[in-house]
Image 1 (tube, rainbow, N blue to C red):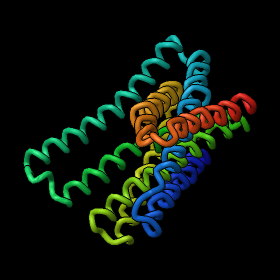
Image 2 (image 1 turned 180 degrees about the vertical axis):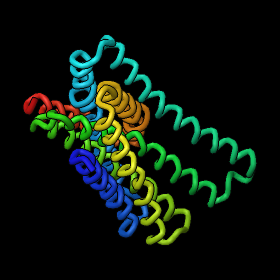
Image 3 (image 1 turned 90 degrees about the vertical axis):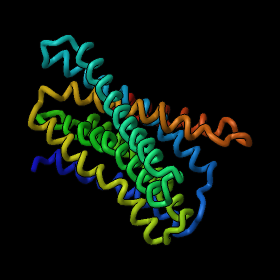
Length: 267
């Protein structure tokens, strides 16, 4: 197994562990502190937006110009849109399953059905996040493992890990409220992140073995990350902010600034 694939595996195991830490909150609380979650989600959104450009799109454009005959703007745009479309389609599949289940079980889909849909939606959305980390580490293959590129890949993993913490809590805490034991709620909550190491290894392996795919896959990961940040993280972190309307917004700005500082200073 290539070194960068092993690094991608280790990084995504780390993001999975952060999901487990988030799920572990169910041992101590029945409900999460909404202000802290909003701040963390906002910070993660800012990190992901900045990382999408400096660590994914910009390298995708540079590598497409160097190694491909197709114009770089076509490769980057196509990859970006495909990444966003992939996540959109995943969300539509979950929504369709939810509607179908409600029509089949008019009693608002029993507790069991609600729990399945909750876990499925979070698990499905973790796939492109694992791919994004895997692609970032796969890009270090064949002489691209300079400290700046390595730091970019690490920061992407850190950004995704940050937003995995509230996601783990978002699974385990509702499960606990539905009547499951703390242990079962934790185990199911942490299991929602197990797809990230799998997707990370797949993403890194694809880049290692098919180098010409790298510009497209980098842009693909960027599109998926932007959709997660704009469609899910930002709206979620802006909820229930009557007391501190700028709390989550300050988290977004801080996350973007930190990611930009790391990428520009080290790049």
